[in-house]
Length: 180
Image (tube, rainbow, N blue to C red; front, side):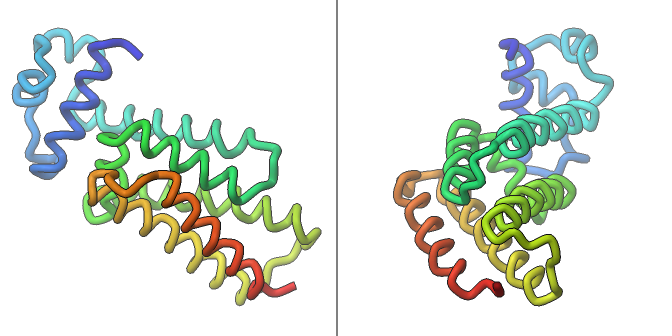
């Protein structure tokens, strides 16, 4: 990623911890990123365009991680997710705040849900999912995302290997109550 792009992404992520997107100006964004406004406008038409490009990039990266994974392992799924979040702390803090960023929050849930369902289908050879299973899958995925949100709120101070173990332990016990 180019230095200018990274600087803008980091600046936007930082500003979004202080204020809403519609209250961020190009001037304060470029000042924070220490780049010229003209440079900003060569890449983006406005702050919303920048935000949308960041969101789409994050979703593409997450999709590449999960969709292309042939392992069919919940542990590897969560390990990759935790690793990605840990290596992109500013962006993920920005996107894991569901009160501010509902659309990407829902897109991340949808992506995880699809991978989760793929793994479950592979493990159980079930092609049908009843309503009870969907309730349980939703509960489980929302819990995992909530743990990541809590981790982000705590500035990622909780050790990532311990977080992974906690999620994997919960998942192992959760599998026991899933319908056959």
